[in-house]
Length: 51
Image (tube, rainbow, N blue to C red):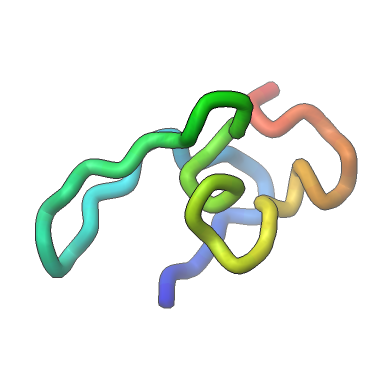
């Protein structure tokens, strides 16, 4: 489990177990939108994720 920032995107994330560097899938603004169980807060609020 990771803590998702509430005011910004996390474009890159390095897995602490396997050191794999994750980046968003095409069309997503951050790794939480691509791989998380919920979209990032800016996207949930229908705001620009990376503004």
